[in-house]
Image 1 (cartoon, rainbow, N blue to C red):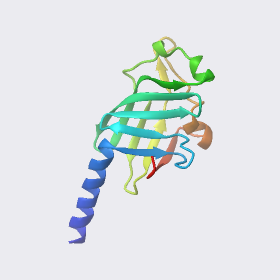
Image 2: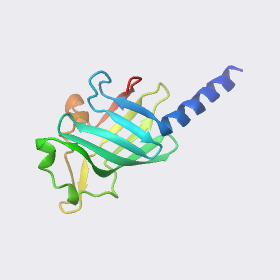
Image 3: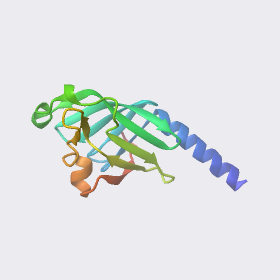
Length: 143
């Protein structure tokens, strides 16, 4: 009986997180927030007061791949980037749903075919707060 309940809880959790939910480095401040608007679109707060983007999200099992779609909000630093040059076909991040409700998130950056490199790879809040490209984001209840 316990196994059936645990399996059902897992299936409900993964179904829910596919269409709604928010994760962040800090849920209270919203730093490093990822907000799913539906099962294949998410808003990413890449850099506080500088870069908020919309993305498409492709899911395979428990892992999402995020792709740049458009800017939502830009501060002075974000306005200095050449947004038209960034790829919408190469993923900018991945995230894997964890059993505890968290999201194991890896930030790559915005891929530029012009330079054949990722831009803003080390400047995103995800990396600045942890000093590494992969980190655990907490599930946020309020957002």
